Image (tube, rainbow, N blue to C red; front, side, top):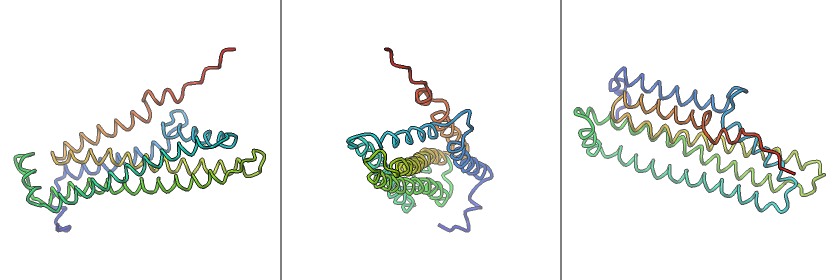
Length: 236
């Protein structure tokens, strides 16, 4: 692929679609992690629950339950990281097979266009998946750090380091979860990027749909309402 020829391959609509995609990905991610105080996202709400989890860890005996939860979280990051690697390998193989790409282009559109353009469209998907892979790997690493710090929380409730170390574990857990969520958002947008194979309008429509889906789940979903609901007092 000749990189210097790429600008000539992209139409003004393609550039607009790419700009919309990048802006949506960056701005929505920032908004989810920095929402207003009056309308917190699920990510922020769950951060408070993670802090409460580590506060309860200090007094919970034994702590096998906490270790099991953290293990399940690490398994989730490992699964998605492995899935991303498989998808990246498959897409790179497709990019390297120009003849196959040309046949797909002719099946999807009346004018397939240059093979280089189709390679570029698939490489965009690869970039998002690579970003997701790196976030999942880092999230897995951070969950590992969290596990070590959790193990370092003293069993003595009155120990001066008990709650400070539990707070450290909570913050590591939160950073791991945020990176995991960033990876998931990248996968959502990677799937949306496949619509670029149908043209710039397809990419713009897919970007709008993916952005709305992510926004709805973070700011207007039923699970969010459940997390915000007040816990009823127990009847005497």
